[in-house]
View 1 (spheres, rainbow, N blue to C red):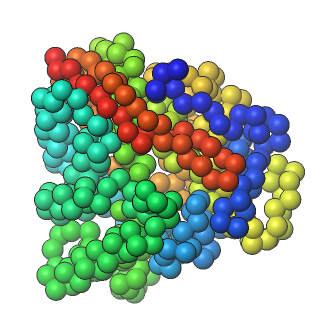
View 2: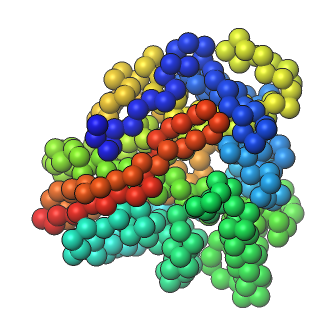
Length: 385
C-alpha cells in the first residue's frame, strides 16, 4: 500500500451505530462519527461546551499538564466572540500581499536547500523548519527565533517517553512568560505587544489571558501544520501526475488544499463537555461527561463525500470539517491554507518529482482507537527541474 494512503479507521463504527467510545486517562469520551452529527454537536455550544476545566476538551486530555485556559479556544459565547473579534484580524494577516511574499521567500529558500541534498528526512529537515519559520511571520517577530523552536522538536507536549510530558510543556510555558515580560519592558509590533495593548469588553487583557492566546498559537498549529505539510509531500511524491496537474491547472490549487485537508485530517478529534443529560445518535450522554467531535471520521462519511476514501483534487463540493466547525473553527486556518498554497505553487515551479526512500508511520493510539495521522519519519529525495 502506498505511504500516502490513509485508511478510514472509523468506518465500521460510524456505519454501525454512529458513535464509538474511548477511555482517555480515566475520563471516557463518546466519539461522534457521522458528518451531520459532528456538525450538529459542534454547533450546539450550550449543550456541548468548550469552556470547561482547562485542558479537558483536548483529547488526550491536558488537565494534568496545564491550568491556563487557551483563548478563544476554551471559551464559549458570549465571551468567545469578544476574544475572537480581537485576535481574528491578526490571524487573517497571511492574506496580505507583503506577508505572502515573505512566506513565499521562506518556502522557496527551504526548497532550494533540500533540492541540493541527496535525501532529506522531511519532518525534521523540512516540515518542522517550514512551520517554525512561518510562525515568525504570524507572530511578527525576528526570523532567527525559529531556530529555538526547531530545537524543541516536533511536539510541544509530547516526548519519546510520554504522550503528555509536563516537563516539555513547561519549556513552552516558561518561554511564553519570558516573551510577555520582554514585551512589557520593550513594546513592539509583535503579537505579544499587540495583546498587551488590547482590551476586551473595556478591560485590558491579563497576563494569563495573553498566555492563553499564545499557548494556543504555539501548540494548536504545530503538529497539525507539520502533519499537513508532510502528508502533502508524501502524496505528491507518490502521485507525480497530480503535481503536474497543479502546474498545468493552477486554478485548482485552492480545491486541492481543501481536499488534502479533508483526506488527511491533520487533527483527528476535539472534545466537548456535556452540560446536561442528552442524547447523541440515540445514545445517552450524561452531564459532565465528554464527547469527541471526530473530524477525521466525519471527513470520510460516504453519505456526504463521493469516493470518500480517495483524493479528488478538483472535488467541487467539499464541506469538510478538517478545520473544525462552528464558532470554534480553527483560528489558524488562514495561516495553514496559505502555507499549503505557497508550498504547492513552489513545488510546481521547482520540483520535477519526489521519491520516498523510506517511511515510518505515526499511529495515534488512544485506548482502542488507532489511526494513522502521518509519519514518525519519512525520507524523500527531491528532484529539481
